[in-house]
Length: 159
Length: 381
Ligand SMILES: [Zn+2]
Image 1: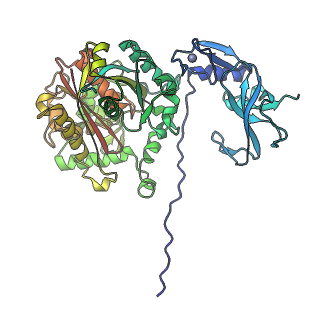
Image 2: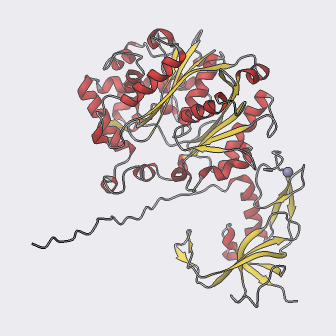
Image 3: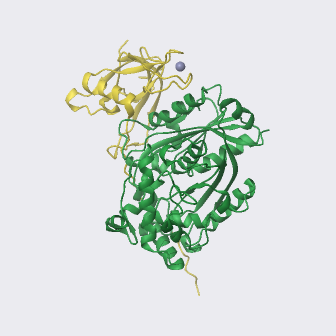
């Protein structure tokens, strides 16, 4: 008698846990500036003078409290990039970003830290280079909600 | 190498139902800055190890200590996370000091229960290929444990309600507590039934907060404070994961953890030696069950004790003079809060909830549903 081969059982499950994350007082101040005034503020350590983004309560290196705010320029320099071929999901909407697209790491003028975001450039290695100058492009003010999606992307600055 | 480990500082946030004004790092920093000020220690030079306590699923972030490494002094230095109750962070920190590797360790536990849904989070603790799809959470599991405990030992519903009455009354004198009051057994029993026999007031409420503690070697401790509290004994133990493998009316893991802690502390009879106990009353019946597991009374006798007033502040053996978790202490933070409260008692700094002449305190914490993992610490001044 032929024995029927048993498929091993595996159980499908989506673990869906709702969260609401408090941004905290430092990031709240930064995001409100972005949403309401189109500005980007970072904190400068009183000791080592690192200008940190996202702004936070303590300088990790010096363990002193950050209290000085500095306004960053909305232009910066591309430090690193990748062309993405995976349809990564935006967890606030559940919708995928459409590949291929470019993620870049931009050091804004006046900042020590870098900011990672989308780069609005053709996903073509001939069109992107480290050292490229970029400008931050925001959503129209009425559409801004106070998170990092208020920044649409960085546009390359020709030249 | 250090022979003894001391607790040299404790700081707590006020526990609140919701802290939308701070993120994890800012909330943690409230306690860290306070405990550093209190001990006159500074990061990074004076602290050579840091241990935090939080949970990925509660925080909604893989490696949940990422958000607090800056404030705890973990940047380009040692920082490790204990993903169990905060009491176990004390155990883990002490082991590092006793090994001779570290001399001064900063511990911090943080959780914001308000940022997610406890029933969903706790459901994820159940085995995905077995009982998770039945929807179990800690409250439903606790209800089964409460019923089994009541049945086996004849514990009454009124005795269990007495724990709530006592702890909310004690919490009136605890400035960190999030709820307190003079209530009656009838108030507890007329609060909505959540999972029979458990009513709303039998459940520790959702709350946000953090606790920080500094441990030091004997040598360092003496230069930091003239009121060190010594960690005299400690023990941990795991029980079976599956509820079906345990008799929920008994707590073998707690008995084992307690035996180890008492042996280390040289305590033969905890009923005689202990001046107070701070235990993890996540659900009111658990205070009674844990008292029995800790050997503070005979099996089935805790209900009678609470009724007699023996566990009230001023009683023969005060239990949770702080008001316990029922007054509002976040999960994970709970055990470190037990330790902090025991330390305040042993330093004589517990204000109106002070147990007079306290010399030996027992702090107990647990993780997992129905107290699967248990940690017992014996502290003395
Ligand atoms: Zn710095």
